[in-house]
Image (cartoon, rainbow, N blue to C red; front, side, top):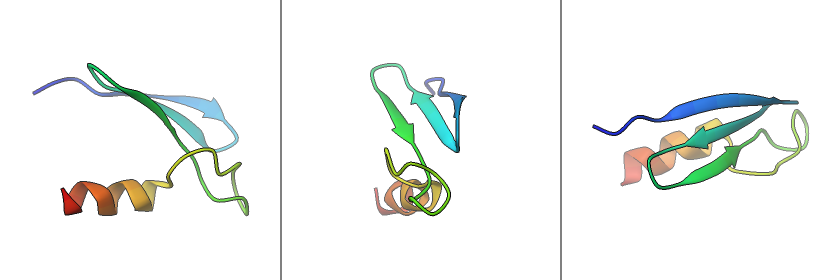
Length: 49
């Protein structure tokens, strides 16, 4: 299994890095800056795949 790292970027943003991809997870505008999918959206997409 490949390693996945998560690093906090501040204001609820998280940098997610896998072996071949990197993306930002973020909360909606009420709490974050909406620069990427929310943790709930990521969970639902993981379950869907």
